[in-house]
Amino acid sequence: MALHPDLQGILINEAQIQARVQELADQISRDFAHITNNLYLVGVLKGAFIFLADLARHISVPHRVDFMAVSSYGITAHSGEVRVIMDLREPIEGKHVILVEDIVDTGKTLNYLYKTLLGRKPASLHTCTFARKKRDGVDVPVDYLGFEIPDEWVVGYGLDHADTHRTLPFIAELKREVYSKS
Ligand code: 5GP
Figure 1 (cartoon, protein in one colour):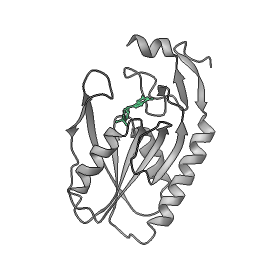
Figure 2: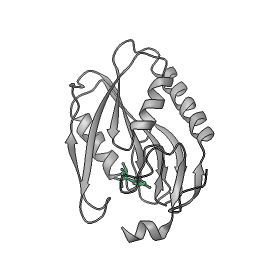
Figure 3: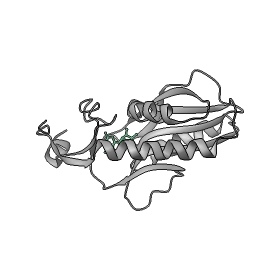
Figure 4: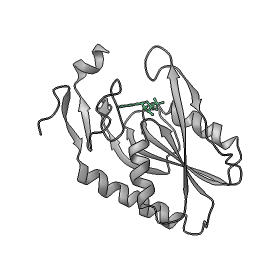
């Protein structure tokens, strides 16, 4: 199938994604093997929904999933402040929580969510992100990282551009001219 004209090329293909997600799930399953019924995966909507769905199905220890949604408001997608627009259904006090994000760019979103969830007194709090952009000066705690990627706008595997391309099974780079137009 031809690549959509807005896309520059495939950065991470489907097989690479699936292999890495399996590795992350194996690592999490080993690290949390001692947790019998208190493990919670918290997915951040919308971007993490596909990653979370794959990850959760590969994790072999019992766990539950919940979701939050955030939005950043400001001039561009990542210049503004972060705001919770949909919160968890259940309290997380005393639970072992893994926060599952799609991508870390400036780190603002993950930092905000990390602090917010930590304030709710979970038994432990870890972070898992599908991708992180190579950038200077970003210092966020990522315990489980899928891929380090270049500082370009990427889509697919849950990630969008203006709510399109989310369901592509691979990660692709958006052409610069498409990104800078919007
Ligand atoms: P940060 O707060 O780390 O600057 O930005 C994180 C959020 O911005 C991510 O959760 C994601 O929603 C969005 N984001 C950052 N970079 C990209 C990208 O390359 N593609 C897409 N689709 N979203 C991105």
